[in-house]
Figure 1 (spheres, rainbow, N blue to C red):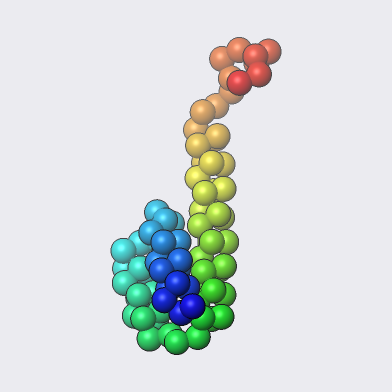
Figure 2: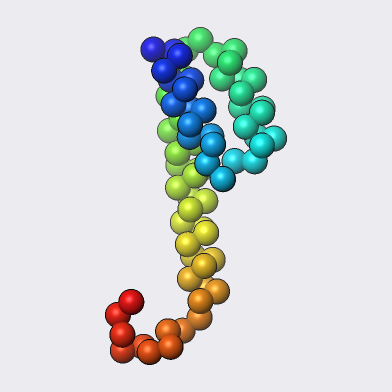
Length: 75
């Protein structure tokens, strides 16, 4: 169970929201952790952070696009 939780957390941390430095620090923590429940809690927090990062990216991209060339068209 612990190895599976570690693997899942590592997969989530590969998201672009996490810098290589943060991944390296997280690796030290998750390698030392022997509590699967704690690893799953960290995974949930990492998923929430990556989702927030994606929402911010989408909002930033929407602002960069500006108004639609043809406002009557539903893109």
